[in-house]
Image: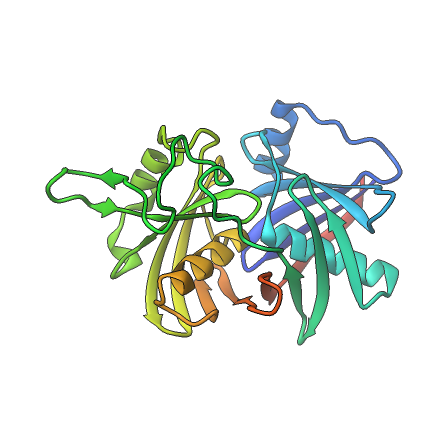
Length: 269
């Protein structure tokens, strides 16, 4: 079985080729792999009858999840090289995604349409997803309040702040991640709009913590910012590990994410 260690804008993955041999790790084994390889997520490529591959995703705590944008770009790179195609299709538990070369070593993934119904996030009760009734800190002077929420195949709460560096994200993230309003938990984005084409973003990922980059988090931040008319529908997202460009196209309502990938090593195991 082949193992690739890769990262997308600093978001690190251990990717196992399970198309020719079964890969059925326990929760403890996933945790150990993530720890040993310093990976934010563990990925398995499996055969799919209709797509170029099926992608399974585990967070570093051992829990299986449905979506990871940066991992999709990394897997897209591998499949594009392997097949020689101009476009590859990747099935996940959330959706079918498409990956393309963007030139200059960049990979673009069509992440599909954002889901903005409160039941789709999901939320525990009906609320206006453009700014839900959630506060962190004193009631009369909250530290954070009224995040926008959206699903990009996984739930995201996005707080728009003046300066992301003013916030203790490792302390605040867990308070929101498993708030009762989010029955499946949520990723938590701290977004600073610099101008209509640029957002500075840090993300506390559900079950993974503060990571150098979060692809679905970048997509979520752009969608929420554009809905609030804070930015245009295409913007650069500046994350701790690098930059992503996200384009929410009016033509098909799909969100396209473009960014770098790095193959750190590959080996047979």
